[in-house]
Image (cartoon, rainbow, N blue to C red; front, side, top):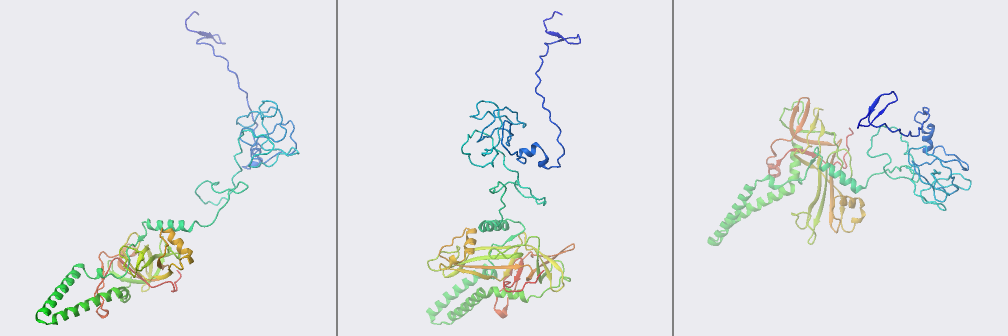
Length: 478
């Protein structure tokens, strides 16, 4: 067949176009025998067990080729090495001959030096003396420790962490750095939406009792009275008006001073005298006072300094005394007084078991609710420049909050409501299906004038919590 296109004839006599296919060289056929079932035990796995140094052959090495324990590559021998050429049973690469063996044949040597009897010695992590150190691939290390199947899910790989001398993982137990744990705990409370952070200092405030307009009006009347009394005294020499104005001014000043000093006790007295309500007969939306035993909810708190567990309310306040040349704790700190430098107050939802009815109600003080706490605080520690180094826990607490511990007179107070404490709660009853709750009222509640105690009216905003000092009080177990 004459054609410009190349063609060839097959063995069957058929002519096909194209050039005849060149015969390919067949590669070496590697066959392996089937391995028996081992049940997961690498000691019965033959080559796999030898690969992890579970079956080492002892005795002098002659002209027999030795298997390398690394995954491909050659290791050095400190003794005589055979010149025989052998093929690796692994799928890795074959290294070049070791220098000093008299040839450039492909050799696999034993992994590690040999002793004087020809037996392989234990491999060390450092360089071997007296032998050649060729470039070889090292073993991947020992197997990770066999851990019991506990079902515990942990973060990170099994072999993460420190290793001991045998190469296994070293278990390091113990708490974290206290300053780090304090920062983590404070940050978790501050950013948790279920926790209410109370940043305002509690206590009685005269500004909340008397409206600002009335205060300015009274001040203006006194100024006019003093001016008129002085003018009459100078004109007709009659001091009666000036004396009346001075007496009224002294009475008003004494009343305001009395309320500033004893205003907090007046409010706590009002809460104590307020009658307890029966939750069985309380109507939805009624403002009540409930007294009972506290039980923690889903998120218990822990006090900042004393680390008191299972609390529903915690308060830790650091005060500083300012002398003539001392530094101010805050912008409104006056001389020769105690000023607030740091405050941590948190509240969460909790349950209260009513003493009157025995019913259990959910008090919604968490999730950013408006709360007015009247919880007694006890002095934990007093610090001055002479004894500031005697309390390492206090210094660690200051470092955890980036507060300086220089020459200052400081006082740390802490208060809390622990599970099992007796608490009085004032709020609005809210019934939602089968759930009985006490929530904050929509408007502040006024205490009214307490004429018998010369107390001016004050406003109670949100839920009111009243608890006495629980440091020396027996807590009811729940």
